[in-house]
Length: 284
Image (cartoon, rainbow, N blue to C red; front, top):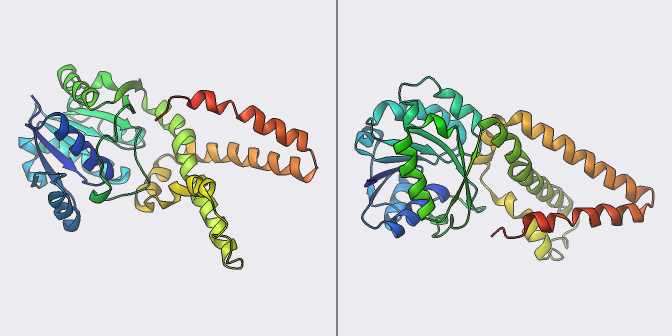
């Protein structure tokens, strides 16, 4: 049974997991660990966690969830595995998987670790950003599942399925390559669109008065935490650079079509890209 859950990092993802698990399994006790005392206190006040804890308490855990920036997770995970019991499962929720899998590949408790990435989130951060049902009908990528003890992975899959996630299995390298296109590039695009408009707005004060829902939805991800995303881009540098090269090539091609008055080409580019509606059909 999973009774005592320790969340390391009580922000959006860690906090939302805590809320959803407590909703489905009210008998569990959720403990929070965070380097920010303000975050811990907020999480307690909001009912996201039940108690404060420290790393020294991890031997009492049935499940530990690492929900901190990916560079911190890589640094902390070996120490967490050193502190847990032989019957504890540790899962991380980071957006990159290769480095974290490599850092524990020879750890004596590798079988206690589940590398996963729930594809869910918002542009907000901290305990106040935690929301219920964030993971309902969302995909949870699990990497190197064969290296996790079967009974532990079975408990985890049962729990995460219960809160609405569907499981997908992938190796870390494939995960990091694919996620660079569908997530990391989206965030970079939003940040740079926001930067471009901010720079232009210095001279044209009316620009934000003209910004509608299209701009707002496109640039929404630029409100995301740089402290979280900088380590992601660093860990997934090779794949991110590759996606940027492809993206820049497409932007350049589109610019050239407009410069050359090839508006039939512009139309066809957009028409062909409309196929994305079929690909994305059904995503919540």
